Length: 330
Image (cartoon, rainbow, N blue to C red):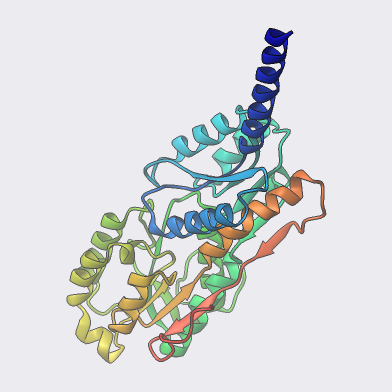
């Protein structure tokens, strides 16, 4: 009898341990474009704050992605691997290559909820995800253009710096920028509409690489000494602050006199320092920490079958040199 009781107690202990492990193994995954991008680290911090506040929820927020933001195929492979894991109960994806990610989701037809975060799928593929949590990227592009028009009401020449060719969020920002500068809808390239013309060789595509972004800026400034405006649709060059200082040093006189205007995306600490130092004129910021913090709760709502809006916007912060100390939402 004593031996039987020991076996029963051991079995009960194992069952309790297994139950605990099962609870801990309910994973809510956030997959970003690349771990080398400091913007996404803010999403990670939001994810980890949620973990700290919800340790007893039975869920854990997992932040992951390819080592390099240029590894589009690697991100797709990570998502596929997560979809094959029984502990993963929902996934939030920031697709680097929206069509490639949509192809995977269409082929896999996941039975768990899939949402997008920061970057969305195209409108044609939106049915493959339950909701999008993040920036209104078209509106972000509109804000870029509105601030540039205040700085340069007569128009001029501009170079747009974009990320990956197939990144829907970046393309939406570019569309908002071009539509607003031109005063027309559906402009694929500015050729004088609204007084604005894109320089030859532009736009430039960084593939989300900071070193390439800074080199492109330097090359553009050298090749176009009369350039009116350079627009960083994302903050790539500024994510490498020392290199960005070196690049902007060559045009500081123009930046101070506003002969050359720089409008940029995002408001991470080094970017705000650049703004305060006069190395940009406007920063239009997203709220990545909020994205990472809210995503797990949204995923749980999806798991539980609660109603979730198809689009959840997290807002923007508009910062100029004059408002740099107070512009970021608390």
